[in-house]
Image (cartoon, helix red, strand yellow):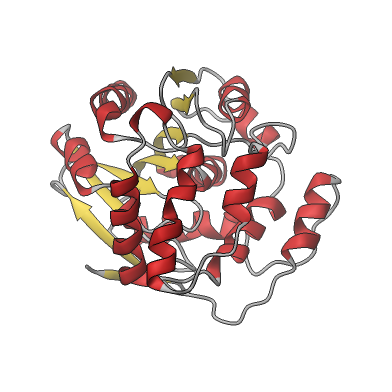
Length: 293
């Protein structure tokens, strides 16, 4: 896959689907997840709907630039967020990650794109729309939240799973992967698939060191309330009824804040996008982008 050296100094690993002559659809993935979390067949469905689809590894993840050795006091950052106080210094924020995404568009010679983000990727996508509105045709925010600490917080069980240290041994990592099913779609949970994906991602790039820095970026970036309220970008918000990692209040509040946003609240969907829901999800996404052109 190609790499792009973007204006922020990061090298981003990326992959494209479809024709460059079609309207661009930039996919931004979530916390500690590699571009492979956007299933190739899912990307192909979006490309077949008339888009030049781009998926990439965020900084500190996958095969993109890693900030080896950069220190962060995650506990202090989170404490400041929950106290609604100024955070301590962090290696980077969501604004820096949004600038990475814009840098990738620049590298590809794309002036404007539809931006689709999932989870932390939704937060980055929201930040792109707020800070670079002239570059965004439309916004799709999936299973995300607006940076308000009062909404979208994980259930106790999901919090234990997300904050647990990742095993460094390959076999133990794969064996532990089913713990993530706590936030996945209850109706479509598939332990074998979860383990296959864990093996794939471990072998491609296992880098737990980046996770605290990405999480610090989320909590240090604060509220996007005013920025979202000022958006004039066609927006689709998608959230699952069964999401326990970013609970549904995060999606409801995001849609409430953005003028004219449409909310798709999905039964039998957790903090994932299982294949049985792809026809409905891609249909809604493509309908949204068609109307926004």
